[in-house]
Image 1 (cartoon, rainbow, N blue to C red):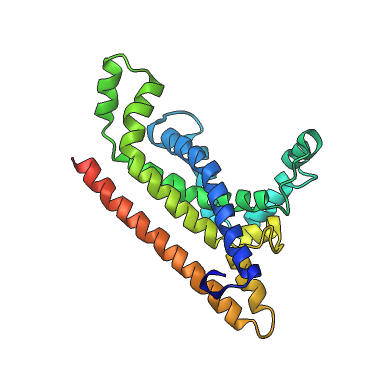
Image 2: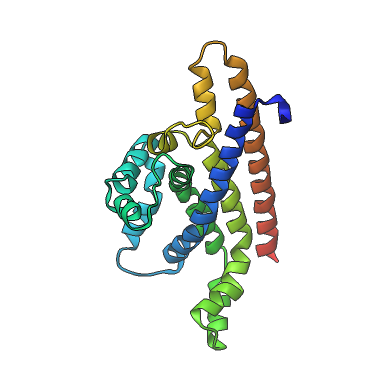
Amino acid sequence: MPFGLSPEETAAVQTSLVVGARAVAVALPLAVLTATALVRGRFRGRGALNAAAHAPLVLPPVVVGYLLLLAFGVRGPVGGFLDQVFGVRLVFTSAGASLAAGVMAFPLMVRAVSLSLEAVDPKLEEAARSLGAGPLDRFFSITLPLAAPGVLAAAIVGFAACLGEFGAVITFAANIPGETQTLPLAIYAALQSPGQEAVAARLAGVSFAIAVAALAASEALARNARRWIGR
């Protein structure tokens, strides 16, 4: 196994990567839409949307996991509907772990995209509008390409945050080896078992290496974004 990891430890690493990738794939487009509404939109309820988007930053992760249980549990309004109509259950599943991780990382992605959108000169969009470009055309041909480095940075930061999420994941998806046991949960389980300090150390090292690589990539993208916008 890579890095001397056992099959169980490798499964935890793979679960973390799958959970993080799935969470970012779903949450990033929503973060882009939310950030665009907050930066460019002027509408009633903007403050409420901003508060809701950033609420996971100030709420304890366990509380977020509990709220997800209430909403997406089998007896919850959303979870019950999904279970009865589509036979889909999120609670205590890998998909549920991605949901919990994505919710916790969502504010970070919204903030990163918002900062990138704020750096885009609105006059460029106004010029395109004067030439007859519609809202969607302006967004996809001007705004989004100019904000792309920030969007990529948001994806990397969100992915790193998903890899480190613990409280919301264990509350909503539990700690099931091979299914929902991500790296933080595997480290926690190892620390609760006598004689498993070496296992915890190996997993912590892998987690640290992945996080450092993600942050380094984010910094590189941020530098490229500044050069791109400064042209």
